[in-house]
Length: 188
Image 1: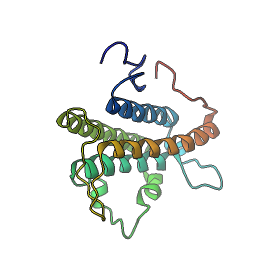
Image 2: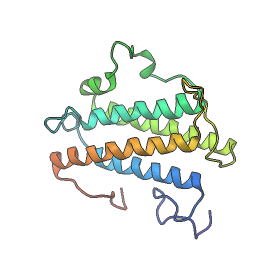
Image 3: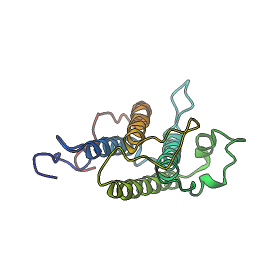
Image 4: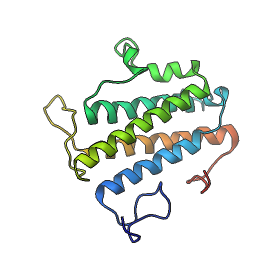
């Protein structure tokens, strides 16, 4: 990356970078904002909700950890879901991650999300390198209709997933301690 294309900070998309660098940078910005909106809370605060919604920051942490693994472990690479997801009977408990988050400690929830993000980053880096930076790389997943989405599509879907949940996290966090703002502070 040249100085002309690099953004001022690592978590921002490049100002004029490649398609893949821009998509990954956009996802990293969403991840970082979500991390800031949910960081530093105990289990009670992570379990707080805004009526009438049942959403909690703890539930969002666990849900996004699952989605990270579904997208960037299962769909991107074709590998199986890691623990704890591999032991869940998803037919019997389709919303397990949301419901079970209430029984988890803050450390377990943060650790689960951070580990899933680390796996995702490693898988994306590996596949992007194999694809020579081409966002059009077809991923391992094949839909019921036989279509194989591209890495571009997978990243776009995940950016959308985070954007939706960052908005929800913003409202929940404000109700807990008044934290508001669009971007984390530079030292976060």
